[in-house]
Length: 138
Ligand SMILES: Nc1ncnc2c1ncn2[C@@H]1O[C@H](COP(=O)(O)OP(=O)(O)OP(=O)(O)O)[C@@H](O)[C@H]1O
Ligand SMILES: [Mg+2]
Image 1 (tube, rainbow, N blue to C red):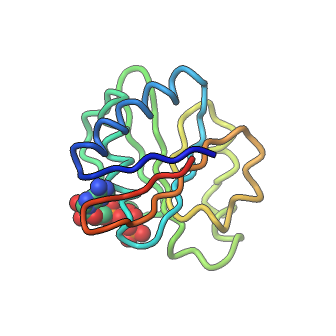
Image 2 (image 1 turned 120 degrees about the vertical axis):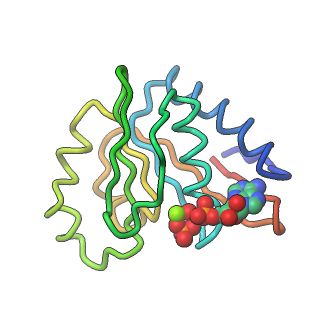
């Protein structure tokens, strides 16, 4: 387990760039973003998507459960399971097919599905340190 202290949004963006490269080079397709409300999961996902070359408008999928972004090389599914109360809802949206696809799955509030992620996944935990500072454990 390692951790990094992020002082502000600029440093988060530097980390996001490294993370995008790390994800590409290590072949991770599923990334689980843990952290309390307002920790910065969506913010980090936006930055990582940008560094992966996505130019789409990236918004929190809190109401849609999943958003899809793509360019001519990659596709990213962005999930937010905050409002999910039963694992059945997760299977009903076809979560397993998303996982089985060779596309990226970036997941906020992954607690409810973590036992079902059989693929090698990268886990990140964002902890609020102060108003603009975060600790990221991975
Ligand atoms: N260093 C930082 N890293 C991440 N976010 C930061 C940082 N400094 C300030 N912020 C702010 O904190 C907020 C994080 O909100 P964000 O929506 O990304 O959180 P979240 O973890 O996705 O929350 P939710 O669980 O509600 O989806 C944003 O307003 C962002 O600008
Ligand atoms: Mg969010």
